[in-house]
Length: 121
Image (cartoon, rainbow, N blue to C red; front, side, top):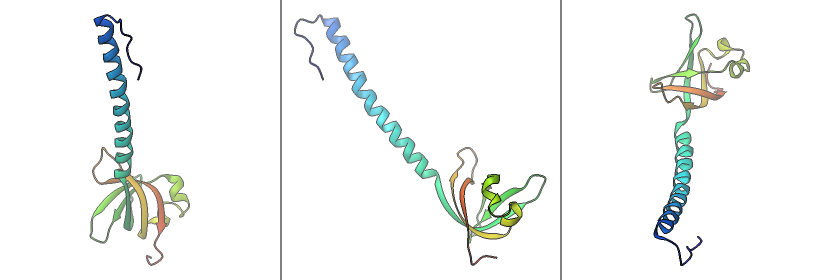
C-alpha cells in the first residue's frame, strides 16, 4: 500500500483512506463470495442408489426409490438416457447416479451420470 504524501489536505486524506478501505474490503468479500459459491455447488452434489421408475403419464417422469423407501424426483436429459436405450431401458432398473439437487424444488435431482448396478434386474 502506498503511504499518503505529507502535505495532503484533510479531505484528500479522507478520500485516500476510504478508497484504501474499500479496495481491501472488496477483495476479501470477493474471495468469500467465490468460496461460498464453490461450497454451495459442492453441497448440492449427491450420489444416490436405488430403483429407477418411469411414470408414464403423457411425458415420462422419473423417480428413484432408495433402499429406505425414500423417493427422489429425477430430471434426466434425453442424451443421457439414450445410452441405456431410452426411458424404457432404465425403467425398473437398479442404478447409482450422480447429480445435483435442484434448489427451487424439494427432493429433486438433476442427473449428471448413471451407472447400472449389475445385481439389479
